[in-house]
Structure formats: structure tokens, C-alpha cells
Length: 431
Image (cartoon, rainbow, N blue to C red; front, side, top):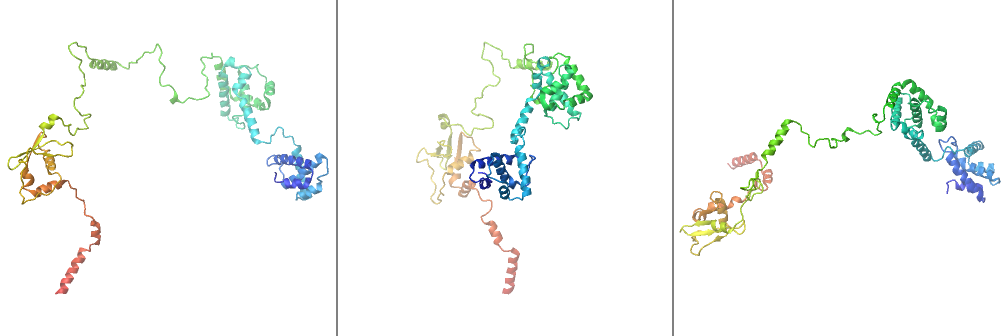
């Protein structure tokens, strides 16, 4: 429902025919009296009443009279008469060539421009077989020259006027008797109004492009390089030519390269001897190392290595205690040959409990002695110097870099000078 529908109902009353006609006229008048149409209303409040009055006049009934329409419009009689005359003129105007939809008008112009091009004109006048694509390139060059002269500033570059004028001028250079200006203007419509002016300008200032077109038109088609519509950048060109039968497979740069290639081939050529297998330049490595940067920590234990590697502990009574290799790398166990061979330690010095004293001592001594056999004096381990043994086991314990709450003690402690002064005062008072 329109926002002015209640005003139309008040004026038309019970006449549905007059109301329907008034709505149609109001819709048309709203579009044709919009700003920019030439029929803009100074007082648009009187538009519904004027449309209702015109609808009643067209239907030839007395449903709406001029007095009631003027009173409903809230305008004085003079302003209402001006509004009514403007609405009548807008409704009577023939807008067949000016469509109300602006998007439709733009689409019609763009479609017409897209239909006019140099290719379409060449095909229309059958010039493709005679000149080929060269005719389009000549028209483009002439168009660039025309704008370089500064004579086409009042004409858009994509306007069909430019294309029609340039085409007529180029065609007149190559075939003067082919086209007539009057017939050309008649066949191509109103966009040829600047064709005569463009032709005169190019005749006066386009002598260079004229001579170029005449010179290229006398050459055969194959020798003339056609102007491509899209430019190719240098980076997109092929880097090498496609191989052919005549081209060599390999290009030799110099004699030095040839000698290098022949000597290299002779060095790596392996002669065939029936006496033995061919020699290999790089024999496979038999070591267990995969790379020189990664070192193998230890070899896997075998039967031969477990039998040879023994750790003998010499006691005070020349008793032997053998230690075998551990089942795992982290644990070593003492294997005693008999109960009598275990050394006896005096009860006056009880031994401090330790998780694995022999493991620590063996690790310390293994760096200096051979890995096949290590002799450890049990006297040095248990009897002679227990404090050194305790320190030896405590070497792996990390100590803190600084005591806990050291900063708190420092901030809470009084000034040493103040403490000294207090002591002096106490001494002096005590005396």
C-alpha cells in the first residue's frame, strides 16, 4: 500500500475504478517528476490530489472536483494549479527513448558500444580477406596518434565516434573509392557526427602514420609483424628453443670443457680384468658407525667379551673377587667365587651404607686403566681412608649456587657500622 493511499481513498470515495486509475497515475508521476528529470515539483504534497483529479477527468466522472482536490492537497490555489500543470506535463511527455530505469539505460549504451569495434567493422565491410589482422593494427595506431595530437580531449576513448572516424580514415587511405561519407553516416547512425572532423584532423596532422600504413600495405602479409592486442612481458618468454633435427644434442662451449670431460671419463672408467673382481673407488665401511659425528658408546656384549672382561679386586689377604659385565649398562654386580674369598672388615669401623660403592670406584678408575681388566685394591676402598671414600661418593651431588633466603637475610640484617656503634656504646655505658 502506498503512503498516499489514504488520501486517494478520501478523494475517490467508493469509486474503485477511479481509485485504481489514480494509483497508476501516481506511480508514473512519482517516477517522472523525480529530481533530474526536468519535471521536478516544488510542492510534491499536491501530487496525489493532482493524480486523482486527472484520473477523474480521464474517466469522465465527477467523483473528484478541483475544489476538493485543492483542499486535500493542503496547498493554496496558486501552488496547486502549478503542481497540477507540472504533473500533466510529466504524464503527457513521451519517455519511450528515455527509460525510467537508469540501469537499463546504462546497459543499452554499453551493449551498443560493445557492438562497435574495429573487428566488427572489418568483418562488416569485408576487409579481412584483403588485409587480415593488419587492418585492425593500423586502426589502433591511428587512434593512438589521434590522441597524441591532443585533438580528441572532448571525446571519450571508448566512444564509438572515435572508432567509426578512424576506420573511415584508414579505409579512405587504402581504398579511396570504397566508402562514401554520406552512405557511411547513414548506415552507422548518429555516432558518425564527428567522422568528418576526425578525417580532416588526421589528413592534416597524420602524415607520418599515413605513410607508415601505405608502406606496410605494399608488403606481403607474412613479412609484416602484426600488433598483438595483449603485451607479453619479457619474463614470460621461453628461455630456450625447442630441439629440432638440425640442432645438436649437446653444445660444446670450449676446448677446455672437452678435455675436462674426456679426462673425467678416463678416471672413472673401470677396466674389465678376468683375473679378479673390479676395484671399487669407495669400499663399504665395515665399522658399526653410521656417520663420523655419531660415536658408538659401547659394543654389545658377546660370549667372548664377557669371558675376557673381568674386574679383579685385590684384598689385603690376596683374595680375588671377580666382577662380570652387567646385564644392563646401569647396574654392576659382584660375583664372588667362594665365601672364603670375601674380605673381612673389622667391626670397630662400621661401614656406612652406600647403594653401589664398587660401581663408583670402577667408573672412576675405568678412565685411566684398560677396559679389558681393572684391578682395585679393597684396602683403599674400605679400611684406610673412609673420609676420602665418602667424599668420592659425594662428588656427583650438586650444590646450590647460593643459599636459600640469602637475599632475605641480607635485607633483614642491620648495618655493620650501626652494630659496631651499638657495641661501643654498650661498652662505654658498662664502664
